[in-house]
Length: 116
Length: 111
Image (cartoon, rainbow over all chains, first blue to last red; front, side):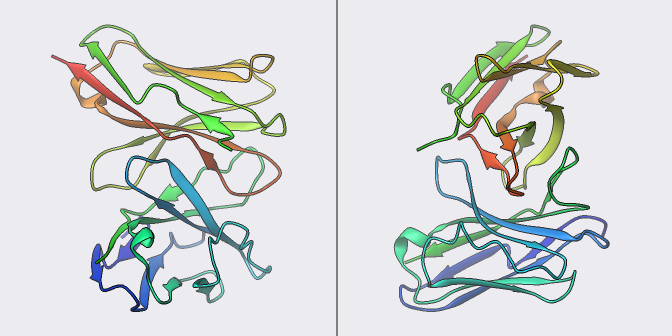
């Protein structure tokens, strides 16, 4: 497909379990972003990858959250020892370049995470 | 501390009329602003943007206005159509690469 894809679309887990969320960016996009949206709130930045540079992890809420990206392809967001407050829609976006005047980010449909 | 604020959680407008969605920001380092539209169960989609060197950008029925002195931007949709009903997010970008989003405004266009 031509767009950003994410899997799974829905994930229900028990408190304390680990989860992995996957993002496939648009081919050729060098920048990849993870955001989350809690119920009734705006999108909250988590982490950003640009090419082979060190990722910007400034938005990760705790050390239970981590993300990896291999080159300019797939990214995985991992949440360890999930808590109920981690329940949210996790959105991935990619862009052709990062920053500047053309920072148009294309979003995937998101993964809805529910922690029981 | 919210750097981008959308103070109206919802807005209802009659079909054919103008919709005006507002957004305020506090960080003077933001130099690029975007509006995204989001339907339920889908990711946000880019709608229109404006750089800080402009005060207006128009694309069909959509116009974004930027007032830098007031740190305020607005999105005008005219004429509004029922298919425009969605959540609209204002976002801003500066030297940091990520976007800072507002909390969104649910627009409902009544037929």
